[in-house]
Length: 459
Image 1 (spheres, rainbow, N blue to C red):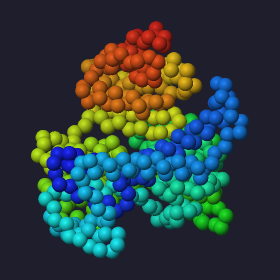
Image 2 (cartoon, rainbow, N blue to C red; image 1 turned 180 degrees about the horizontal axis):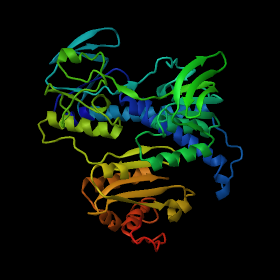
Image 3 (cartoon, rainbow, N blue to C red; image 1 turned 60 degrees about the vertical axis):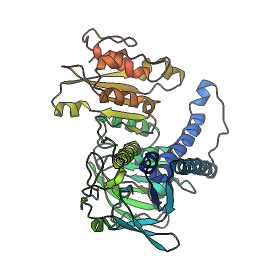
Image 4 (cartoon, rainbow, N blue to C red; image 1 turned 45 degrees about the horizontal axis):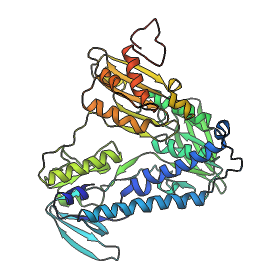
């Protein structure tokens, strides 16, 4: 994004890429994982709910090899699209790895072993992040895998332990469970999706357990024994020590910025020695004003859409445009069933900031589109300030919530009130209607659920 925008603004741009264009999101993250999740959802729907609505597919089978080929075709097509966009912006792309040799110079190590000096006026560091590892739980690419390796499995195991109950662990753990793999998720903290709105975590935990996934939260992994035909994971939770066994282990305990071996010291760029994050300002400038850092290498949250915007801001700053990276509400989506989406403050966060928060939750069970789509499990929660009516946050679980959470983000960014949201006309029948209905419920003016006499404010 930084290269494309800088090219659009008339800059001479060189992009150095050591792997594939598109970065982790396109090649080893968002896109391939969503392709696999889509395939598994289609398969699971044919085997479970399809018969109830008159779609009969008794011989439905899942062919992992075919699905993987289709996934790779999706990634290849998207990657070619990125190449086309770079070319249209006049960007020169060189394969290899660059390392700073000074504040305005870098060494390019080409794939053939050759080296070339690059002198630059401006530089943008956009190296992303790599998977964190735990001593004793190192991946081997076969029996113990990280997310990148899981996305290219050649066969399905009978059982899989997932160490880490964050977004990747939940999404890919559920993907495997839909295909009949026995899945156990082990999370150190008290809930799945640590840091996310607690009701969303509880909703997902119920759904996973109904799917047959064993969930162990508040559980610490103590050690791993690799036997010939199985893995033994020693853990300890509230009920004491326990041993879990499975064919394979998926380790997904977070990521760290890819800031090592970049020559940051030679360039004079400041970074946090403990976390690895490069220090930047609101224009993504480092302490060296002509060197910028964007995306996962710069700061959390590690989200593709956050990185996109940062790349654009950095390019515009380089071109001398008045710009800065400033947001009030950063949306996030978890692509499970139910899908989860969140933006803005939770009730607890709002209280900490001195608001008088109140929340209201509208159920998908009262939504016509949800019934017509056989997707009534879900809800939308609105958090607003009692004193001013200011919209503070929206948290949702259910089909399609990721597609309308940006409306809530826009409303929060614009300083909208809950009534503004309620008075926005939402097309019928859509899942987005639940957003407006939740706002009406918060106001005590519900139209599609009965108002309780004991509370005329929709509490």
